[in-house]
Image (cartoon, rainbow, N blue to C red; front, side, top):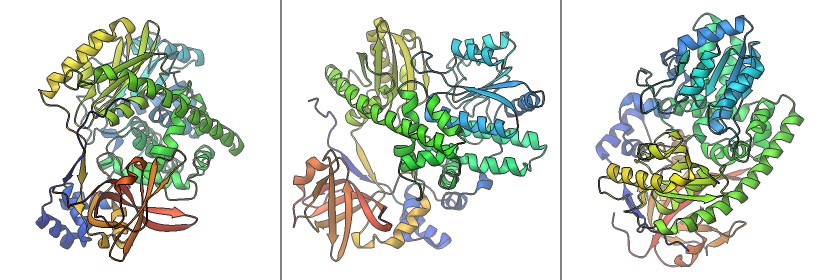
Length: 588
């Protein structure tokens, strides 16, 4: 068994300016704990507090502020009026699938002639390529719209232009390091160097939504969008919420608005595909949280693209017949179970392959590869390795003379910058700070590993990645955790990247009853803690092996997040245990 290389998890309390927190209590009439949460996270200014606690649709930025938007909507309006054929070119992940679906549904609503294309992960690779040209020609497209890709697709877009086919790029990935952009009619990407858009962290699905909104304005002839198009845009926010959560972009500012209203749109959606997806995930009829999307919706959509073609996911999203939608959703559910099985197998191989690279100083980026590793799960396996070894990881599935891989990183370290160091040894690569993809020739693997690790050492400047640290928002007496405080905490939802669930520390707790090992695989722990007369139940996921550390009568210091748990129609306040210590009170 490969040893865990990081030191013991440390706990750290967020720095809190108590005077500023008290100011928030007075100015906004907030619960003191909620004010402390906002203050500890740096949300202090009046406008930011109001925006965070009560985000409004009216605060969304005008899509016309995005680079290329006016050129794109003018070209699409002309294509629709002239009966030209439009090809929507997505990608095989959640971001690409939802953005493709959104645009296709809009084009159906306005009577446009449109087709869609999603590359096959194994035969076509990522983004644009010869398959893109072939598909555009086969449907007779004169306009191609990319979703979640295209900013770096210089050669293919040049070829399309030479054939008289206009390309509109909607994307959110970083532009090429060279700065050279493809000859598209428009490139709508908030990360372009020329962009003046106020928020650069939109996901690909959100950029596609902005194009849909911009086109609705263009077709309406004014900022006051026609009623049927306005209703569509509100409903389509369900797709944006799925993409925003699953692409792990920061849930702050505009993304927070899109996710919050999009989750409500998803709850109430009458779209047969979305309803079938909620049903198969067993989350219909309940208030949806970001975690429901991240762990129940996203994996099922992704399973189609990971194991072959994402066509089944798009077909589900576009289904108009409930029976057809249910069949497609059940197929995705089965594919997701198969994905889990394959993922476990590749993870086992990857852990063994990691053994020679245990030296964190020499290998600050863990790069492993294996023949026959399923390329549809290498990204998930890379994320698992990051969790295990607390350093960036690249996992490459080899297929004879070549390989395709995915990279994941730790907070604060750009894996894309590290990959720049190995660019001479790749066929192509791209992505962003926390996630990237690449292709290379097998014979260049060792050179690639050495070059990426050398670049990572430069970026780190001799400093190792820190051991895992749990950031605690505040210490809270257990008796103060009640339903009223939880209702106040609900104002911070949805939780996600850069808007984490509140994490509390309560000291001097005792066991109310013996912990129970639960779960189909017996890896989880069910606990009940008490402090005086206060008793709360909790779950400690993945902590079954630590059951012996919890002894009745001993002091327990618990780090946890509070949560609602609904079971058989009854909703109760519980906790999700993150970590614990026993014995003397910990020094922080």
